[in-house]
View 1: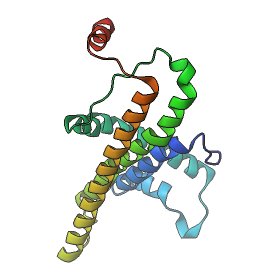
View 2 (view 1 turned 90 degrees about the vertical axis):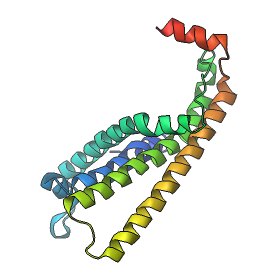
View 3 (view 1 turned 30 degrees about the vertical axis):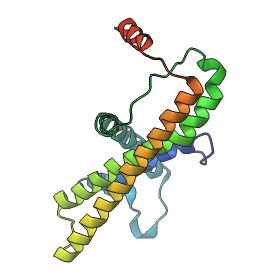
View 4 (view 1 turned 30 degrees about the horizontal axis):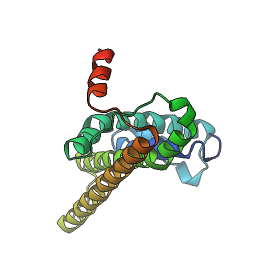
Length: 188
């Protein structure tokens, strides 16, 4: 993989990083994934190992994205953040600006929401695999820490998607009333 640049940073934080965290959770059950994520005796990772981890992280991140779209997106919409019906009629002229909004807000929303799912997955995998701490005190503190982290990630995802919707609506405008119904009928 080439170096992280402004062009691919959004994809890395939205999919690869949460996917890598998810792979860590998978490693509690898969010896193969565990080998991919660890190096023996401090040896440098191989090119093949790096490729496996990168592609598996991307695949896991995309899968986490699918879970996000059926869990967190509806949660935000149900709790008061309406999804705007954006007007893409003049999109070509506004493409660059829209892309900046996506990279500056939506990718961060994806990161926060994907990490909320990935962290919860790792926590569940630790418990299911028996790798949870021995003492009750440690379990309580880890549970509290994970709970607080989940709150921060979900709240951050909520703010990021709200900002994205507002900026995208300001740039592209939205359909209103009858236009929305006509658009829905036209799609079906």
